[in-house]
Length: 155
Image (tube, rainbow, N blue to C red; front, side, top):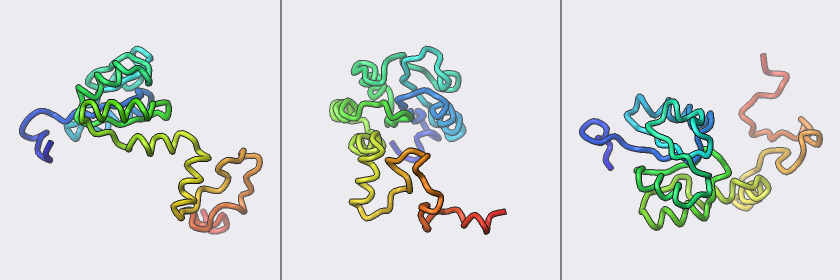
């Protein structure tokens, strides 16, 4: 695949595990770029199906469905945390279709406590309140590195 594929030949096909609202927005954004989107979702006529090139109706952990997605796409991604990272790694190895983010990253982000621990281990400060209910979150605990200015400076 080259940068000019969409100008000179077949369009790039992005396979997306999940066809909800995020998948729909992704497909709408990809279209003007010449990227076709193929979604896999267990719900017939899921939201993304209206704007995607095609839909594979299959569960997120259906091996045959995910394998078909990878075989028909140039690259695979996910829009739902229910995607099975082990299956994605297996299908990537079998088809040589790139999967982004990496299945190991997907495994980490599926569990917010594991994700926060991984960020802390990497030297990053996890978001305040991760692993806590919102009732336990004290606004004073919000990280000073937050992109929002202090409440008194906001308009």
